[in-house]
Image (tube, rainbow, N blue to C red):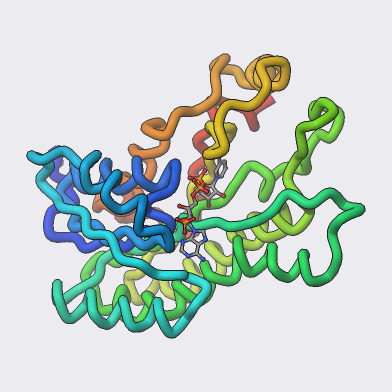
Amino acid sequence: MCQDIFSLRERVVIVTGGCGHLGRELCKGLAAFGAQVVALGRNEDRFLDLLHANQADAPGQIECRRCDVQDEAAFATIMADVARKYRHIDALINNANNSRRESWAELDKAGWRAGLDGTLTHQFTCAKIAGEYLLKADHGSIVNIASLFGMLAPQFGMYPEGIRGPAAHHAVAKAGVLQLTKYLATMWAAQGLRVNAITPGWFPQKRGPERPDFMREVTSRIPMGRIGQPPDLVGAAIFLVSNASAYMTGQNLVVDGGYTIW
Ligand SMILES: NC(=O)c1ccc[n+]([C@@H]2O[C@H](COP(=O)([O-])OP(=O)(O)OC[C@H]3O[C@@H](n4cnc5c(N)ncnc54)[C@H](OP(=O)(O)O)[C@@H]3O)[C@@H](O)[C@H]2O)c1
């Protein structure tokens, strides 16, 4: 047994939403462990930020590509191109997420469908397309990013006036992410492609810090007494992509400072 079980050298890892708040930290962490990372996002302005943030001496490199992951054809073209360039694709991190926070009163059928598509449907289509390549890898791995609200219902009483909890479609879609993870895990286990999920607990939002009174309420419910920070998520991703988790599939790693244990 040696530390190399965590090595990602020569692994090509696709990260959807790789320039986002948590995604960029995942990309940097995977590159630090040797992966060639391909970060997908829609907003090219964020690419330079991510490329500059990657340590110049990191053993792995990050490449950014413009791709709307809800556009299956665009994603398929990029996968074919990446496979041509690197000759293999070893892992997919389904991290992108795009959902609004409509209240129950505001939510209609179109908003419900858009929410499911923005959170869940692209995890299905990306897994379907990338799966063709990952099945050919020696140690393929898919990591689906879920949410606490896929496991727990929101406690509406803890949200003060002016702060919204997740919309119904978001909670349902993230629960779907966990079930998709188990379904794909059993379907592909015998072929050596592993599928696991990570459930982040409370992490900072890209729109900036929430109100201090709300954050006090949230942290009072977290045994470790603080919300997560983006680097807190990185170890779980490295673990699930690497050989360190070679005998794990269909599981959900909850990274929440203990929020779900009491
Ligand atoms: N932050 C939290 O507290 C928290 C808690 C639990 C779970 N999570 C989960 O963690 C993951 C990352 O969240 P985050 O906080 O980092 O959110 P974020 O900053 O909004 O990042 C999400 C990224 O997804 C990208 N994206 C959305 N739709 C896309 C599409 N159709 N095609 C390509 N890229 C798309 C966005 O990129 P562009 O807008 O540039 O295209 C954005 O960079 C999500 O799955 C989220 O549900 C977050």
